[in-house]
Length: 489
Ligand code: FAD
Image (cartoon, rainbow, N blue to C red; front, side, top):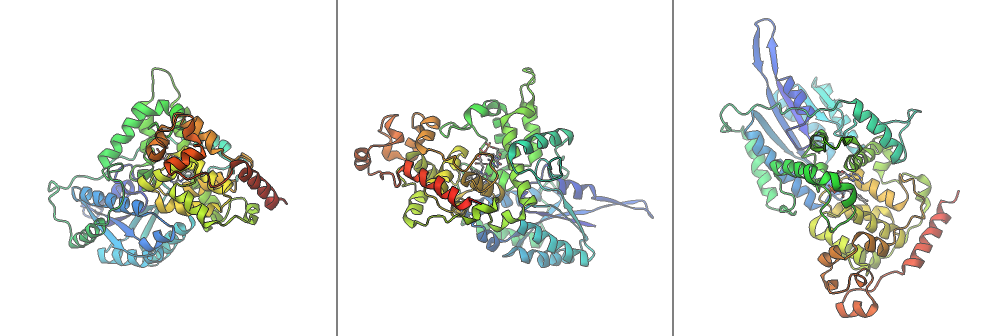
């Protein structure tokens, strides 16, 4: 029989539970005649650009997705596997299209890894019902995170702050005996020369047309699975042990830069873990699970688990309901200055220009710029969340929403709302010599290491760099007062 695997944001062939599961069903024995039948494996990807547009997904991310799909199609052609692309619009198109495909293939078994945001769960439920009505077995597997069962507190409730979640998560991780799913796909018996079926060829041509519109930094994030693996290896071998000390400095390449691949599932979470474990310094007797990088992967799980446990987060609602009463300020010029990197705060402007030019922003800078928009410009976090999504190559709903709500003090954060990042102090601490600023705000490159964080009005005039659009002290005071006023019970 035929096994169909539906890939979504898990665009890879290795370390893949659904592919592994489907592959293990590959050989079926006819008990009457003791004959072994070789079953067929098919992969399907549904393209739903209208839906992705609804979530403000950037063209960079959409392009990278297509390029990864192309790489997968090429890879699948060397395996005994058929690849199908369904060009649809919205999630609601998936159920009938998948039913059509199953019927055309005479397939009675479909596999996928579940996804946690609300719309994705609705989509999957619709597919499950429709296919179930037609006697097609649905294997909906655990989500693509490290701890895929809900992480709950002693009362059986989800955690609302990270630190206790992390402790429980780590316990679960250690108990899970995780392992990387082996590559279960055999090479094509014809040395990769097997002619793909016509449906695959048709989709492939359409994919090439779509790829002509490619719009992302493929010099930084090539759609190449060997490169992805090598990047992970290099990071774990050379950078992971210094990560704690380097990760906050945007001028240092101290982080993995894997987020664009992780957001599309081009590498699996278990593979991250096993590579990290294999490279840790065994002689120093370190506990590899105590590292800071693993803690960041726990944040990834945390925000995804929140989406699962609190569906209102998927509906553009604040995690803390009382913060919905806040009347945010509207100021088109301020918002535009923030988007364009023209606020007159060099670290904020360098960060926003990095985002526009590369589709990626360093984590410390995401916190600084988000705090700037929501606290100092006192603008609705949803505006910043949407703008980030429209630019980020790694735009990922759970992490982006979590990061924005954390920064705006409307979400899961143990710190009180009066924590406001001072952009100049942040700049002096994390970009002490202004190396990062000089790269993205070249008009300031001749300023001294001291002045670069806060140019004088004369320096601004001379370099045609804008003067600050707000006064930090009064903006901070306004935010704290307004927050207290609107959220008072
Ligand atoms: P590394 O430091 O190498 O971390 C490894 C991986 O862990 C990352 O690739 C990512 O998958 C995960 N991770 C790390 N930090 C976080 C975090 N705080 N929350 C959730 N996951 C994390 N991350 C996204 O992947 N997509 C987003 O759309 C996104 N939006 C953000 C918006 C804001 C306002 C903030 C404050 C953070 C956001 N993050 C987002 C989290 C974080 O900034 C990025 O994951 C990180 O900068 C990616 O770089 P890296 O791959 O080098 O990360």
